[in-house]
Image 1 (spheres, rainbow over the protein chains, first blue to last red):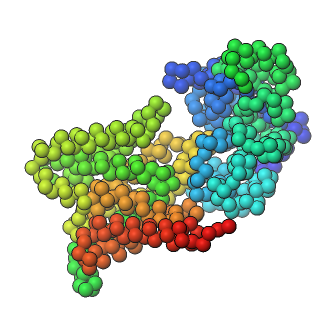
Image 2 (image 1 turned 135 degrees about the vertical axis):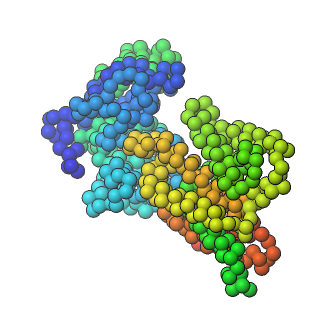
Image 3 (image 1 turned 180 degrees about the vertical axis):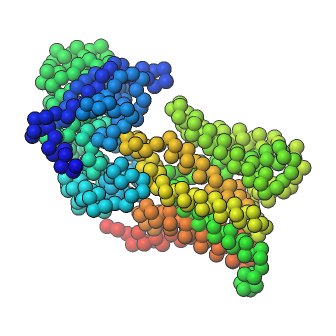
Length: 253
Length: 279
């Protein structure tokens, strides 16, 4: 089981597919997301781009099951995801997290195991190993006993990624992971996401900096409540396409 | 003098009640501190008074049970009502709570002139632990045991929800249920301490113990168990010494807890004001 994601796609040719079909989300009477479809598979890094209020966060939350879909289906590995999947991990925007919560890095990563352990079962050695591996994969062993409020932005982001790994999530849903990170931290996080995707995970992240999309992502979905374009970054981020997709909204990326 | 007190059945009951309530409310104060909602606790505590007035008004008499259920009903209505209103995303929960609890309090004030037993309401405002009967002990024990049981069984989902509701929901935690549950338990804890310390001071028991612990350690579990110990031992101590200083036991409990907090604030080895500065 633990090895499952390493055997996944990238090295073995068979692909775990995420298929999103005609997903719409309404907040009360406001249409937040209309008729979004996309199909991708693990091993990819998908950027969600578009102006503010375009529905990037909403799409991530809809996939994670945090907001109810008013229409549409989400299928992962051929099975419809009704509400939430243990194989999806949601990473909130950093400013939405209460970083003063008294918990250590290790404690936060251990929370990722709760879907496996359930509400009562004590941690087994397998759980402890999964946490150790997750901490190691994100180079957090030396920080594991620190309080999360003592971390830098990049370290905070890595702690949540480690939590997702401890959960053995295959699909990582990240809301603006690069926002507020300095150059080095961005570089490190970019490398880590590349590595995680290479190991066979599917990374989906909202992103607002068009310039860095080609370096950080393989595919891109351009959103403005409705999907405007989806495909490999090289095809999406042509000057004509940018002109077309961002002209009407008159908002910079 | 202490031995004299200990053979007095009133003091015995007072000590047992103080221990129960102090421990269970101290334990629950861990959640209040983690959730940073001490102000909601304060608002809810003020809701109990109109609840008691309503209980008396509807039944025509003042009894333990009328007061208990009146307070429970009003606080639940306002507490869960604020969670429900805040779900609409339009009004923030603190705002909703302030609106609802002041409205309830105003209704209580409007009701007061219609009650015959007005004088005795003061008793509920400040409590009287020496007057606790066996019923009160059972209420305190029953509620305390229930709170400890439920929070320990659901510790993981509760902590996940308090830390980050979205991430918790993505892991399959029924976040909304947990949020209602926390408020229900909070109201029960408040009501259980009504007879001992009264509406206003009940807030102290539900905030101070874990706030003190948070100055001493970063361990999350210590907030609960440490809060329980500080609450329980502090309350028993307070009842024991209150006679010596000629003050009522209810206020004494909250004063002792307050003093412990100030001591921790000053002398905590890690975060105290007078602690050696860390480089």
